[in-house]
Image (cartoon, rainbow, N blue to C red; front, side):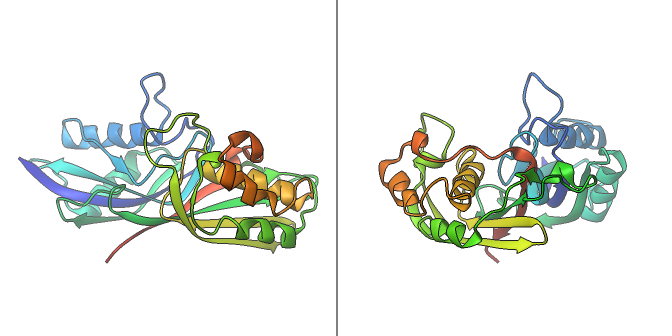
Length: 252
C-alpha cells in the first residue's frame, strides 16, 4: 500500500557530481544520493522523480522532486522527512521545502516552465570563492548584440540545432518565453525561461550568445541556425559550472 506523495524543493552544488540522473557506473549523482537516504529511512527502495536532469557539474538553486513513501514509513510527515534528509545528505545537497501533494502529482510531467541562469565572468580571473560557479571568459561582451541574437530565439521554435543529441525520438520543438541578459559588476548573467529544454540546450544557446557578444557571429545568424536545424551552425557548448536550475513552476 502506497503512503504519502512528498514533493521537495532542493538545492545542490553539482561540482563533484555526475549529474542528476542515477547511473549504474557511478554513485555520484543527486538522485542516487537522495534515494540512498530515503531507502535508509523507509526500509525499502524509494524512487525519486526530478523535474528534469541536470548535467554533470551543473548546479540547482531550486530543483523540484517527488517520491512516494510506503504507508508503513516513519517518519512520514513532510517536516520530519525534510529534517531526516538534511541530517544524512552530503553538505552540498540541501532540502529547502517539503510538502504532501496529491498522489498523481509528478515533478517532471506536471511542470509548466523552468528557469535556468548562466553566469559569465568577463574579468581575467574570477573571485577565488566563486570560481566554481561561473564560466571565466576573461573578455568583454557586447550585451546589446547578445540581446539582439536572443530575440530570434523567443517564441516557439524547433531547437534541434541547440541539442547535443544527434537523434531525438521525441519532438525538439520548445517555447522560450523569455531570455534576460544583464550585467552585474564584471559578470554577465543570462536567464532562460521556457516550457522545456533539450539536452545541453541552455549551454549551447549560451555559447551562441557569447559568440554574438564577442562579435564572432552576427545576431541574425541565429535565425539561420533555427531554420536549418544544424548543430554545426550553432555556437560552442558553454561549460557546466556557470549553469544553475533556478526555478520550476507548476499550475496552481
